[in-house]
Image 1 (cartoon, rainbow, N blue to C red):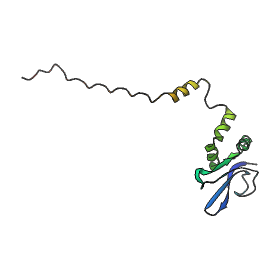
Image 2 (tube, rainbow, N blue to C red):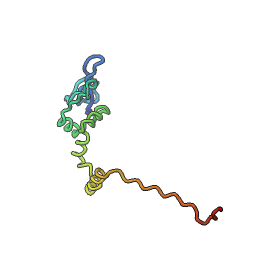
Image 3 (tube, helix red, strand yellow):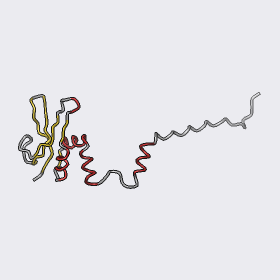
Image 4 (cartoon, helix red, strand yellow):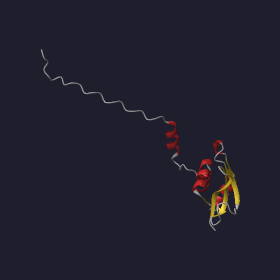
Length: 128
């Protein structure tokens, strides 16, 4: 059974409202679902997005594969990074902390001074 995290459409015509759900990939888009994970209202200000974080992480750990749109919503909330860090550890490898801290603190590298213009040759005879 292939489990997907995907969106189902609800709401009325021209006023879409989506639910983030866990469903078997063989079911139709608005068909039977296993669990509701959240909601997404794209027409509201600030893209009104609510997700049950614990349950989403649970299903990702169980192997549920998010669709492209669901993946972008999970990325927006930071759940994909959190899942990656739970599974693989922190993103910064040991020994690289100093590099990342220095890179964040240092301002832009100073630009080198332009080379001075060459002086005219003094060997030339002066006109009188």
